[in-house]
Length: 180
Image (cartoon, rainbow, N blue to C red; front, side, top):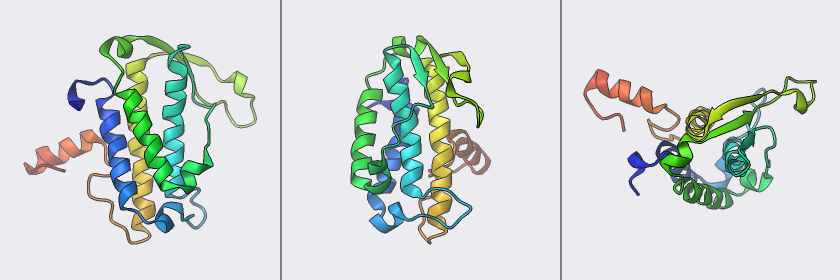
């Protein structure tokens, strides 16, 4: 699959990084809950990120993506092989997005402030491509948390996991060596 020419190519590449990491993990590392004040272990971080992709895909047909209406499927948190299956399904759906899909206008809604009803959260104009960019950044952010959680348990994710593509390119420019 030529990811460079797909609107969701960066998303697919990042999600595939997650699959590769999950396959290297033992269940104990995937399911472990960190000590407080950190909230949520590796499985929970993956579940949270995937929830945003589910919201995205669920909202494409209606043209309205509501990021607070997440599935919160605990099976993803607890079962790494199920998580890999879900990621594979997401990759398959993202790979079908065309340039025409990417250009489509879309409305999005995030979360309302704590204590306010969700209906108070405003809708914003966006595009499918802009939401793919958001999802990519959001995923990398949670991968960085996963990297730290695993490092605290003595597990090395690899130097590029949880690092933004722009940072990897910057490192490459600084050293003249491929960052990956």
